[in-house]
Image 1 (cartoon, rainbow, N blue to C red):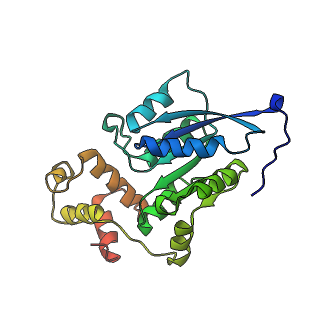
Image 2: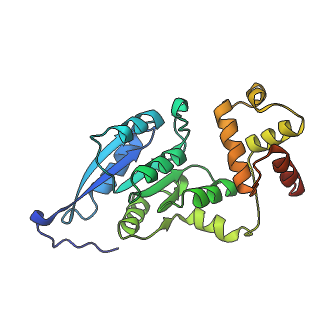
Image 3: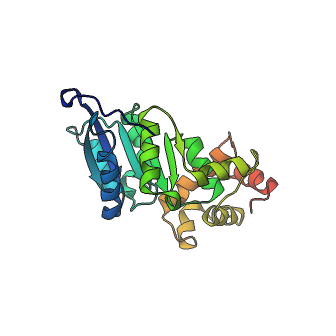
Length: 232
């Protein structure tokens, strides 16, 4: 990786960066890496938020500038009133408001279905498993995204390349939702049995229907398709 250090200070390019993570020390690490990137060419204005609510408020603030790059942790405290449950939902909001923003998602998830779902629904410019993350890795990802490329960390590439294209995997909460649907449990009653909110259950049902390409949107069709694929 080579950087151009010859641009005069008067020609610095300004870029607006958003970092959202619920661990302040991680935000500081990201900031440290970003500010070291091509300092003779770029000036970075960095905004930060620590959960889904503060990020939502920042994005809704009319004085907030358009962001060029957004670093988003996947798992953060939700803002249920606005149905913002994760960095994925924030990414969708950002891309709706700022379609030119480049999104880099960072996650501890290593489940194949989760990674494939993120790629399919968000199509992020960068996707990094946090266990892969080093200072150099972050800088390399940022460099590639700044140059209009995509960057998937080593574990992401390995998972996607090794998985059969037609494989479908779901997590335990999704399996519980399918199980209770098959038993006739009403969606509004499922939070009595599954330790997530009703809104999260409803969102997972929508995601399952998208994953299994249920065009009718019916729970009966969802169960039929899920059962035929041995998902529960």
